[in-house]
Amino acid sequence: MIFKNFHGIIFYRNKCFFFSTSLSDKIYVFWKGYKQSEQKYVLDILNNKSVFRAENRRISDSLLARNQYGFSYETAPNRQLYIVKDLKSNIFTKHYVSLSRDRYFIKEMPELNWQIADETAKIGEFHCQKAMVNYGGRNWTAWFTKDIALAEGPYYFYGLPGLILKISDVDDNFVFSLSSLKKYEGDSLYLPKGGKVITWKQYQQLQQQLYDDPMFAMRSMGISKLSKNDGSGGSIPMNQSELIGNIRKTLITNNNPIELDQKVDFK
Image (cartoon, rainbow, N blue to C red):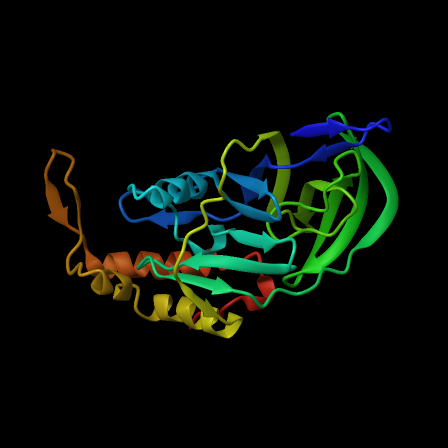
């Protein structure tokens, strides 16, 4: 629902904000090779909670909550930008799903110490102000608007006196820009249930395990052999050594996580 007061400030309750996101990496897909994919991310706000996730994860979560089959989605760590904020208790949780579909939660999230500048700009119809912050070992520049009285933003970013419409790190490895907004029609955020709370150190260990033994996830799911389309409607076995090499190469090439201070130096 949208309300306007006499000062022209817009208040949003139960809304969803769509962000177009530019990521600098490429990922390796088993059956397609290397590709650069563009994803939309969505910030949903319902009552005192918000969740930021990829649009296809959002759809998948809603299907799973209805006991239906969810969508497949990328499990590349760099692209799992999934954050749940409990705005009442001030508890923020990062979600991570491994290649074997095990779900993990990280609750060790730091406080953001914003520096608000005097510089202003206009983004679309909104008057914005500049702010800077360090998060995850990166320096970020944000543009927020007091026209939307909501201390929210994409991913983990929050706490400014207005919605963050755009934010990027100084190297433009991660750029989030608001593309549209609309009323949230659901009565639930469809958050997944079940999983294990882990520390950042345990998260790093999971990444190292993936590098050390890329086929571990397949074996844990009971998959002993992989095949691919032979181009004629049939299938042929995949070269496992080549596949392992490609996965490791991708992990090294794209080793540029948004939390740069949690980066794993693969060896």
